Each structure stands twice: as structure tokens, then as C-alpha cells.
Image (tube, rainbow, N blue to C red):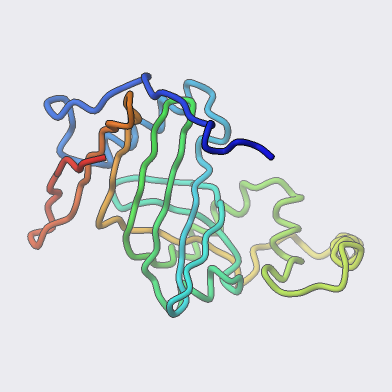
Amino acid sequence: MMKLHRMRKQYVKGELDDAGLPDDPLVLFSQWFEEAVATHAHEANAVVLATASGNQPSARVVLLKEFGSEGFVFYTNYESRKGKELAANPLAAMLFYWPELERQVRIEGITEKVSREQSRAYFVSRPDGSRLSAIVSPQSTAIASRLELEAQADDYLKSGKPLDMPDYWGGYLLKPRRIEFWQGRANRLHDRMLYEVNDLGQWKRTRLAP
């Protein structure tokens, strides 16, 4: 068996200096994201999305497709498990992990659907295969076999129907209330910087112990 307790490394690639940090965490996120892309981090826009139904949390990897001052946007089937959970409980969390930079970003906030116009603008930019899968896949539901799913895709293509965005598909905006930046440091004395929105709607920054 693998000796998991022997798997460890030192983190030495960066630091978080209080004096050089912006007041707006979205500015810092943009800087970190650009650095992740520049260092060819594997799928830099891949993010773990956590939702919850009752007392049961669930998580999966999705792809970030837009971000800005309002928050973080991803797209999915509204009838999927995550879509149903967000309909019942719009609170969600995201986790970015860029091992190439020894960095994490944790985000917590509330989600809302983006406009149909915004969703459609993204949908038409997708490759035909991706649009087809969004149309024919009953995401998160049980299916008889892979062959059945492929047959449905083939039948749709043969029908000549347009690859239009279905009503059950679209985007979510996660509006952050907490954003934590984690920079690995030597001997597990990591840097953790937390931004939280206060009662006045302003960002407050706090350093956390590792």
C-alpha cells in the first residue's frame, strides 16, 4: 500500500504581503487568474462548485466562463442535481486550486440565474458537439446505457433540428460574500487572506492563521 503519510512537499513559490494587496478581492482574483493562465495551469478556469440539499452537501468540477465585479458565472442544465439544489438553496461555494502556483481561492455567496440573453450569447459560442450534448443529455438522471445516449444524439442530428439553446439550460452568477486567498508557504505556515462584505456592502480584509 502507498505510504500516504509520507506524501508531502514544501510550498515556496509565493507569499501574500498585506501591504501590497488591493482593497477589492476581484482585482486580486483577476491578477491570480491571469497568472494561472500565463503559467499554463491545467484548465485554470476549472472550479469545484459546492451546493447543498438539506444537510447533504455535494460538489463537482465546473468551468468558470465569466467573472467581473458582480461575481462568477458558470453554465449548466437547470434540471441537473446542482440546478435543483440551487433552486432550493441558492447559497453555494467555489474552490479554485492552482497547484502550479501553490494557490487556492475559496468563494462563498449566493447564486442567481443570468439573463436568457446572456446565456444564449454564450451558448451560440460553443462548438456544435457541446450544444448537442446540452440538448440531448438529461443531466444527472439515470439512463439505460451509453449507446442509448449516443443514439439520441444521432437521432437529433438526423432530424435536422437547429442546435438552439433549450429552456432548461443556462447560466448562474455566484455573487460573492466571502473570498479567501490561500498561498502555500514553507513548513505549513501558509498565508490566508479573507475578504468579507460588511453591513455597509464594503469589503473587509482579515488575515487568518493557517
